[in-house]
Amino acid sequence: MILEPFIIPVRKAVMSFMNPCLKFTVACALVASGLSGAESRAGWRMERGENRELFAIPRTWNHDFDGPTGPYRWGIVSATCEQGKSQSPIDIVPSQTVGSASAAPIVLNYPKTGLVVENTGHVIEVPYETSAFAMIEGTPYDLLQFHFHTRSEHALNGALYDLEVHFVHRAASGQLAVLGYWVKGCNLLDTTCKPNLVLDEIFANAPETKGEKDTHKELNPFEFLPVRRTGTGGVLENYYSYEGSLTTPPCSEGVRWFMSKDVITVANESLKKFRSIIGNFPTYKNFQFNYRTSQPLNSREVRSFGSN
Image (tube, rainbow, N blue to C red):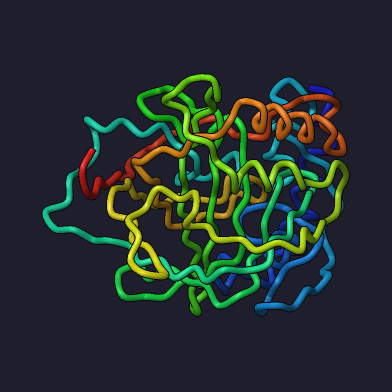
């Protein structure tokens, strides 16, 4: 009720700015809104190794569900967040998925790169500057960055994991593809808890305030991803796929989603560190979560590949 008087003007301003881009791809919507990959950020890496600061539509939003700018009010920022019919994330129910008759492994070519950790004000993100890509159904998708949400955004049978990591890719056509992985927190005193030195390193070096930090260390994603190793690369074989959207404003649709069935573990201490940083994000006011809740599946189909 408090926000109602300016809902329409803000939407008109957003749509007015984005209209010239409507005939292009989802990537154009990302540029118009100042977003990188799947999330908000100040600069957009249009070409590998190059940062370009673009005009961003002035607005404030966060993930506080009870706040005036939280997920339930994102329609103020972009009507698609409220009216879209193919929104992400979703609740994946394995018994309701469609099994694939043939395997469709996703080949990952992620060379080692320098570890830079960025605080965007909405996520902790690791930009990827080397020539990394995922081969999906014969089409190469360049890896732009990966970032983290807590709790997990996608649910599995209605349950959330402690964390979710998104590897954001883009094809030459502008089509976006996100490879997501569920992450479970665990106690290192438990013998079943596998240490995750890579995530520990990322969260330990995540800036407390908005900006980025060069750790001057090397990153090898295959040291923590639950995929089959193939020499210097890897293969994602067990996953769910569906057509969805960005999980933050402008919630643009037409994004291909692939959620790994295999789960990553991370120490509870690292998870606590990550959540404390989120609480210090601008406008979050100690709210220590940055996830969106499950959206209606509507008529979409979720496909299942590999073993369960």
